[in-house]
Image (cartoon, rainbow, N blue to C red; front, side, top):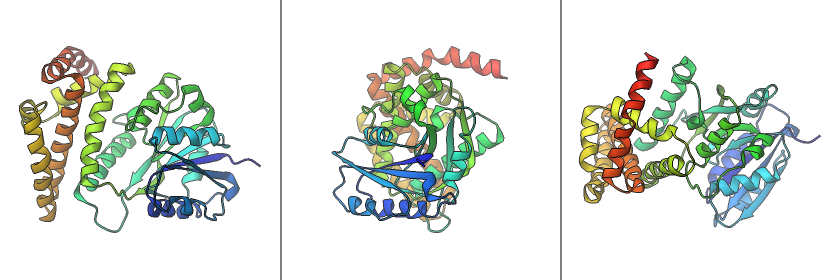
Length: 337
């Protein structure tokens, strides 16, 4: 019998992490014939190929390609998939034993997009920037569980998410021009097909990221850049409204004042990139967790806004774009009260 689920794992120079993820898949509660795995080696120069060749108890296909980014890698995996359900898993997560069973159980009825949970490892201290990232995820999960907001394309993280293969093909697969936010961009197209998004807390992976501080800073800037691309080139109008609501109505006055001072000014932002991580790191070393997390939030937002600003064309374009959304967002907030 053909597998019901194909697990797709793109990877690049993370052989040690990939081995850990594949070992965890050996311990799934469903039979190994229920799923197969496609690993896409996106131009690695380490031992990724050797790790992927196993052997493993489940069927595993290794695809090798020159480095083209995660979107192109996942597309190659989808095109080679045999399962009706595609489960996306990142190479730096450890799947829980029932991960496949929970995702598969969510696809027995209507077509949907299933989003699972990422949690921090129980043991070991994470770097302060990774701790902040997990804190932000945990807040989103708590809000979705409590019903404070419904899951949407912004929560479609391909570290732990599943969709039927036919729906991915109908949506047009990932856009390879995106090197970040490729999952969110595809999720908006899945939403336009009418697919509901469902958060399933029981579908869990441990997320022990190898991301460096500089990688985290680059990630914040990439999100800002690609959100402009989504709004400008992909007709995702929600992006600018979300930014305006967040900045104009949700952020603290002190952070808004700092943003108006430094965003779009290269020298001041260079100083922020240098000094803010050091201060957050000192606070973390002194076990001043609230101070460290607040510092990370401020830095991430400033980096994101600055990248957004630069891609829009400069400070005037950035502030004008935000102010243009003020009456729209204000009316929406009033209607929601």
